[in-house]
Length: 210
Image (cartoon, rainbow, N blue to C red):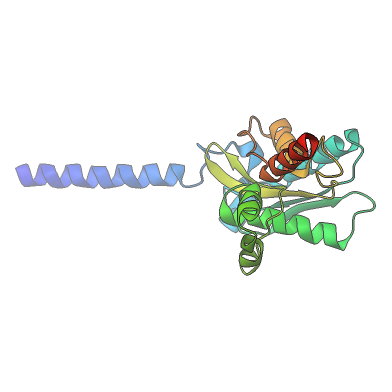
């Protein structure tokens, strides 16, 4: 009787485990449906976590509106977690180099699961970083951010085309990506320090003293 009870309890536990797995495998309790693939489209791809096209388009439009306010053009690339493009938008006047550079920023953020600023800062400390990362098809340019919702990565965004900080000290590509994410998805982590800007400020201070 005791053995029979143990077997019944074990079977019940397995059944509960299977039911629990079946109800949570799609990540629905972690990533709101408004941001990810769902329904038949998700079932067809067996993918319930990738950023959906509607969210990607909203991010691109938000970033363009931000760029216009700052008198700039912009390229925006949004990738899914597999590195496939979900949405790409370029404003008039942006060409092949800006597009390819922006794609690399998004891929870098996706593959490293971190802002491309991380490698940008590392390159300031060790210029060999740029050459080394090129072998992995990664870039040391800032402007790429992972898209994370409730701790789950659903894609990555790359922004390019905004003039570099030396010619545009008030706004940057990474800021545009962050602000677009905040508008469409919600609060984002603070941006990492810009070591290149800090170095320029230090050099200017030294020149002023001299």
